[in-house]
Image (cartoon, rainbow, N blue to C red; front, side):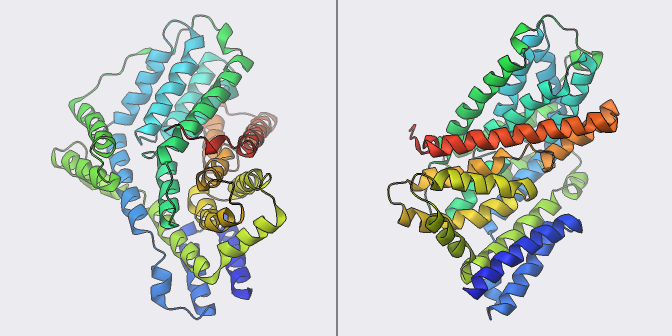
Length: 417
């Protein structure tokens, strides 16, 4: 019991220290894992056994593919094309085109958010419209397509589920999430008055149709081949991504040296460190202790909304993929044994969706990107900056409440196929 409590305390300290001292979460997590190893009298092999090799290789392969697409301008081409198509004759169609295209990009694992967010903020400024009206479209698309198995959040989520020894229908959860967020999108579409929009003239840089190069076309083909290999041929995602990476580098689709240098090493380090820490925590009984606390304080009716609330609250200050999910998902088998009327899939999905509900808050990485782009484009005063901060926070809280309600009614337990 004492070691289980200690493991949870170390997790909290790792999160706090990495945020306060701006230390890479992976490094802090490795140190935390080492401390728990010594305190629990474990072997080094026990600590290393938690390292998720599958997730690490998959993330490295997909990360390199996205870097290649960014360096050779494929991502810029896609985002420019979205704006050029969406801003044609009527402003009311722009959010719909933007939403659909960004969700599709998430399903293919293209991760356009970091590129699109600054462009969306700049476009709102040029069009002289409230920035929240346009940026929320991009944020909802990120959430709506993020659970797809090719998307970065979906890859992390499904890998943690597999590592915990559970089997789920990942695409079923992804499509349910897309449906839910698409409904939410149309609620805000009408609430923000987009349906009343008239003709609009886009700024020159957004109105000009981008021209695709050979290397960009081949990169897009690579994404499609990867998707076909996984969905049609049943191949491993990491294997297909690595093959596409190799081909693109051999044909010179980008500067190979630059691509290797710009790999997301910080994220890979974070994955390695956190999977090692959560692995040691499982050995010491941390997730099981947390699971027992949830089962004792809850009931079959309340456990899913409670899990959603815990996931959303933790994600306000910690990474959903690197901290919240690897911490909470391993406790699902224990909860499922206690509440036999609830499906494992609905419990797992509650954590997966709930942990991303607050990813749009201004305290999250994505929310900070919005605030940074807003400052750079609008150069606002303190009052305007605070207003956007509060509105993003309010939208994140509202989304968390919506996900709690969906969890309570068992929406994510629906089997579509």
